[in-house]
Amino acid sequence: MAIWIPDLTNRQGPKYLQIVEVMAEDIATGRLPAGTRLPPHRELAYQLDISPNTTSRAYAEAIKRALLKGEVGRGTFVRSGDDCLVTGEPETLRRAASGPIDLSRNLPIPGFSEPHIRRVLGEIASGNGLPALLDYQTDADLTHHREAGKAWLAGCGLNADIDCVVPVMGGQHGILSVLIALLQPGDLLLTETLTYTPVLMMAARLGLQTATVAMDGQGVVPEAFEVLCREAKPKAFYLTPTLQAPTCVTLSASRRAEIAEIANRYGVILIEDDVFGPLKENKPAPIAMAAPDNTIYVTSLSKTVAPGLRVGFLHVPKRFAPALHQSVNLSVWMTPPMTLEVASRLIEDGTARQLTDQQRRMAKHRQNLLRIALGTENLVTQTEGYHVWIPLPDGWRADVFRAECARLGVLVSDARSFAARANDAPEAIRICVSHEASEERLKSGFEIIARVFRLQPSGSPLMM
Image (cartoon, rainbow, N blue to C red; front, side, top):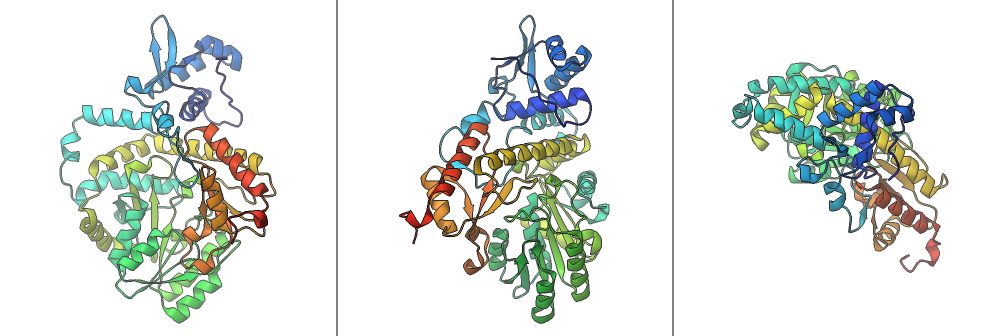
């Protein structure tokens, strides 16, 4: 193959780390397959017009991160699964090399976190703290992990009180713990018109009533929230103000302030789901900053580091903290110490933030590929997250568009998948650009969707 030359355009930070970041991204997406021989560091330095010391330092860091391996007399190579150090290729790509192209899963681009997690697991295994991590632990034992949670929350824009940090098994478990702790059967839970539907399933299981707050092009309408507060007396309102799933909308600072003021005035608990927040640059401050006594803030590492870690954090008003700890204990006894320790170390050494930055850059790159494939007339919005929301042209029904894509081998989601009531669902689809490991498969999926857009819906035998 041609010599690998990393594109460092628009990268920030030390040059050697820029090289390592590009290397990790190219390995994860298959552009640098396992076994690829890297150019000698002096040759790469010449190509990039930088010091050989910089490229040498980059290779050393990549070996430390288990991205590369050096062989005496032969050179430096991309590691493979046979080295027991998975890098996203070949194993991740091999898992996704067949079957439908899945653009329905709103999860991180795979491959980036694996070498880091392997490194941390090795450090844990060789250290003295493993026995404690394999034993039952109390809330008092989790202080170190809550400190890591506080650091993660700070990166999300929230100044956290350590006594108010509750570790959970991902965002979904956190939301369930809140509903169990603070709501009673018959209480009214509000959601956005289009929402994370597992919350509706939780509410049904717990005997809660639900109602929806109207949305417009800028997200939740504060006036609609106030009408429900005044007339229906809800107990809580679940919302996703940043990179809302599925609409991609980020609620403005002014609307966040209005929501906070209304919640404070009527005593409504806000459940602020901000799992996508770390992907958004320059986002407004969390609602929890304006309504700290009424807001449960939910975050996790599932969307930026690794879904399988199942680690998240709640920040709760101090008056709710005992109930939330009890709810977590009731549902799982304790958030698993081992995964919490892995997550904590990744947060503390800066790896979690680095992985978040990589995911954000790659998501933006992949959204650009989608824009090229679909054209600006179809791709209405572009955001920093993993998903894109596309209202369909007149004549298309979203479920029919989704079915036609599936018939051609591409999975997308339609608006009805997110609607509390089917009649509230617009004719729109959501496309996720992230969880397909192979960029070539991703591009193929985009091209198929573009072909469906070019169809005349009135002539489709699927139209009803």
